Length: 112
Length: 110
Image (cartoon, rainbow over all chains, first blue to last red; front, top):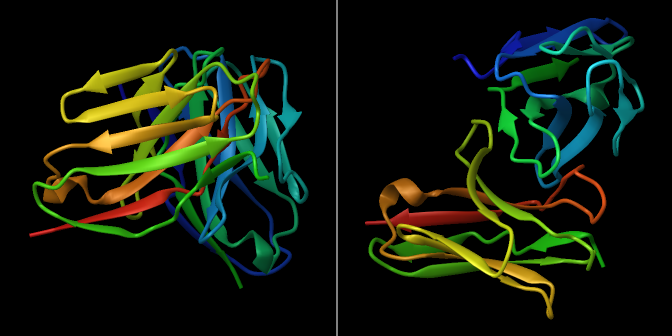
């Protein structure tokens, strides 16, 4: 089992460009999450999906959209990238209930 | 008071030392607690779960003090490979959306 996979691993964008970060899990988990991690700020929840067909905002949703494509896949879209979105993005999944989460390897995004 | 607070450290300890970190939380309704480990430039990985008073796994012991609303992580006989950032995670009561602390950095030196 691959666990949680994310693509791409690295990305450089110019301000105003758009892109989609992909995440997939093969553990048959119900819940999936997108976080960003910035120095000194810890992990902050952007969006989550408690189950297939549902999505909800987390702590820092502005500037992002998500799609729960099916039970396996949860994508994060930046419509018009800004330098403030330079960060490391982690996708995670959990069975639901107590969040023993499994994380993907992360995407390092730089917006110039 | 922030929801989940941790001393960022770094804690610098020699190999073989015992070290403990605390994590305080504000939501008294929280029922489950977690410690994650994050190596530099890597993803967080679950280290221990704490559902009642505590949990022990080899050199690692997690304790829960509900009255004072904190959890602790004790590492005995520290190894160089224990060097990492340790994240405390507390889901608010009634929700499984986790709140992460900012992490405590541990550096174990020879």
